[in-house]
Image (cartoon, rainbow, N blue to C red; front, top):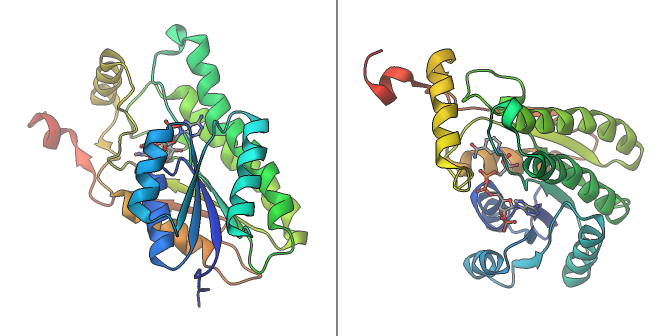
Length: 261
Ligand SMILES: NC(=O)c1ccc[n+]([C@@H]2O[C@H](COP(=O)([O-])OP(=O)(O)OC[C@H]3O[C@@H](n4cnc5c(N)ncnc54)[C@H](OP(=O)(O)O)[C@@H]3O)[C@@H](O)[C@H]2O)c1
């Protein structure tokens, strides 16, 4: 028995593309309105045009900045007049061998994936408190717990494990306010996620997987992840999906990618 999301307002971080845009589309198709937070103004404008300006509002924001996050949440709740939920989806990865990790890229992953989630939750809580069926969904990654992945994801996977552990306390702390907290842990889906990775580092990570992994966790569509987020947001008051792991069910074997091994 799920709740109708129609009329609700949800902030989706990283809502300009990939999972975030698919989540925003899923919510709009179910009658909700969405505030999109990401850094590139151009990509935000394109997403808002795609979803319709009456349904979507974009605020250019770096989630790693607490001050910018506070301003963006105020702008969205003022624009739509309410806030019913937050989907912490903005994230990035920079695969590399641990010995060679570049300081700025370590910090960017921690700041975006973990601190960005913390700051957005802090900004959302006072706006969600007292709402009809308020919700927070934090996007994790199967790479935090499963090892049939490309390698060299140590920092990225650690930030997602941190998001999951943080979400446990968040859930406990927010029960008194009836704010439901869910971690959605997706496996691999094709998006532009890897488009900024250095090609040689990506190839090294794939070679590492060839040496160790049995199957590549890849093959879902962003829309599948979006439907799982809507499922979590649409739970009735008094119940929350704690953790929802969604992964491809047709694993890509090495033989499929490289011929018989
Ligand atoms: N794709 C997968 O296979 C997969 C699997 C498991 C989990 N995930 C997780 O799912 C989430 C979405 O991934 P995706 O594949 O959709 O990635 P994507 O296509 O690269 O999209 C990432 C989004 O996050 C935004 N973003 C990045 N850094 C940001 C920052 N500092 N502040 C605000 N926005 C920021 C990007 O916009 P700007 O660059 O304009 O800021 C973009 O809108 C991430 O948390 C990722 O870790 C992905």
